[in-house]
Length: 167
Image (tube, rainbow, N blue to C red):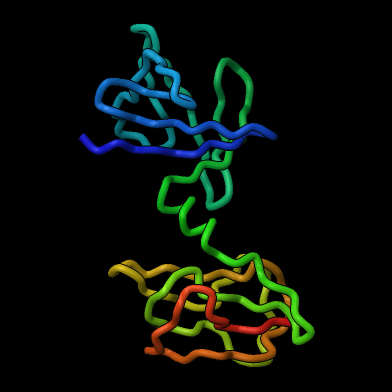
């Protein structure tokens, strides 16, 4: 069975949650629990100590909100792939020319999503880079105006190569 690992941040704490064939582990400590399949994506069911708990969840791109025992909790959840991509993404490097957005990995630029002079916002897609047959959207880590585009569709790039300059 495949081992699924998630990183869950709640307030100022982060937990590594691993779902393995022999149980659930939180930061390496076994928890006598398992997820129970449900037909509704808005609910999660878990069996903990032979008791089934169900709680509603509301998920968007940035966070997961859920109710448990009458209290609302907010968490950020990443799987291993998302964690790797985020660690590879450049938060932008300040230079005299502005902020540079760099390729998070070697690959092929599938599409440049902005033009020189465009006004962009934090989180907006800048380019799509294909690596290992997966398309990964590189997003702006801050807002500004696109000053320079240093790549074009179909171009091979190396990790750390400048894609776009924003000021």
